[in-house]
Every structure is written in C-alpha cells, then in structure tokens.
Length: 205
Image: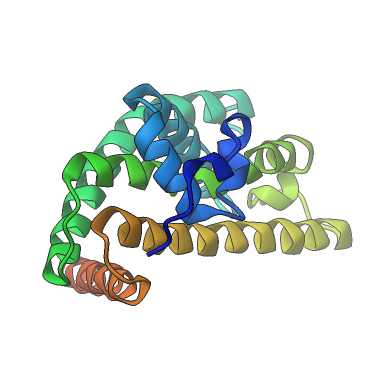
C-alpha cells in the first residue's frame, strides 16, 4: 500500500488531482472532507451520467432541452442515493470476501468520488446537447451530416474514457478503503458485475 502523505494533494483541485493521483486523492478526501462534499460530487456526477444516457435516444420535441436537463437534474438526487447506497453495500460485502476491512461509511463516500470523471465531461455533454442536438439525439426529421458523425465519435470516445476511468477509480478506491491489493479489489468488483449481469438476465429473460 502507498503511504504517501495527504499533502501531495492540492485541496483546491481535488476533483482534478484524482486523474493523476487517484489513491492519494481518495485517501485525502476521506480524511478531510465532510458528507455534504461527497453528496455534491455524487449528485453532479450522477446528473452527468444521466444526461449521457440520453445519447442516441429519440427526440420528438414533446419536451424542450431545458425540460430534459431540469428533470434529469432533479431525478439525479434520488438516483444518486439509491445507486450509491446499493453499490456501497454490495461492494463492501464483496470486498469482505477478499479480506477487506473497510466500513460502509467509507465505501459510500468513495463510491461518490468515482463519479468525478463524468463531472469532467459534463460541460462537453451540455454543449453537445445544446448546440448539436441532431447528433446527440436521434431526431427522425433531421438527417445528420459528416460533422455530426465526427462529433459523435469525439464525444463518444470521451464518454468511453470517462467510463473506464470511473471503473479504475472504483478499483483503486476499494483497494484503499479495504486495505487490500488492487488485484483483489478488481476481482471483488468483477464478482459484483458478473452477479449483476446474471440477475439482469434472469429478470429480463
């Protein structure tokens, strides 16, 4: 385990530091930040994640972009608490199987920090939705052009990178909170993912 001091993390830029010093940043915020900080980060990250879920969805004009953004933001509060409580509980139990010693409170706060990569791309998502809705949504009466396809590729790539980094932070966070190796943390998270896939198939099929 890394024993680098918390002073390596700039308090003014913890949201950015997690990109290059994820373990140190997680350790730092867990020991210095209070609950409202994690709720703020988690809700904003969930808001960004929910907006991303609209990519490729059909847009009929029944609701304005403002309506979509507002309703998505308001629903993000409930979705954040439900998903974070569930994820923290399940991942904590999974990590315990691999010798983890972390507590639920720490897991809840760590899971909130995994949403940071989506906060990074939130301005891009909002800009994309507002100024190029024909490439963000599936609008039947507008035919996308070459520029729209290029924008879809660029923004889609950024979303994939953010999603991968979210998973990486999750693994490092589990390792830090439970004081286990990153390999054990990886298998703990993988076990949960496999279980969720099996349950989803059982429910849907």
